[in-house]
Amino acid sequence: MFDRPGIVTIGCNIHDWMLGYIYVAETPYLARTGADGRARLEGLPPGRYLVRVWHPRMEGTEEAIGRPVSLDRAGAQDLAWSVKLKPLLRPRRAPVPGQRGYH
View 1 (cartoon, rainbow, N blue to C red):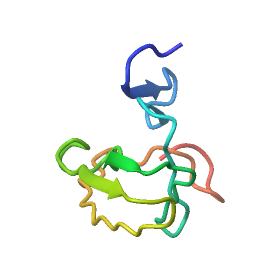
View 2: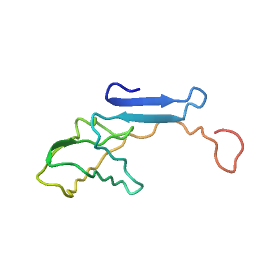
View 3: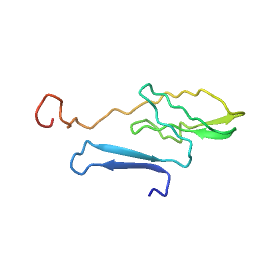
View 4: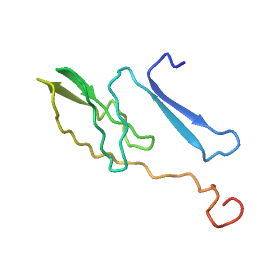
């Protein structure tokens, strides 16, 4: 059970390149992006919200790039972010398809 909001990083104690992330949110309104980088939040009642995005390698913090949004009525509102990612510094160690062993 996660009793505090935030990011939980889970690593494999055998395969050090295997990482997983759990994002514990303070709200029931959340979405995960698809392959096209888009996410859709539905069912939000009118009101004021702070919209945030997160990626494990993004530069800056989710709080720093959050945006206040006011919804006057139920309906769609488009928002766009450009998130700059830090370079991936881990060496590739996973098996390569068609090759034996680990690299």
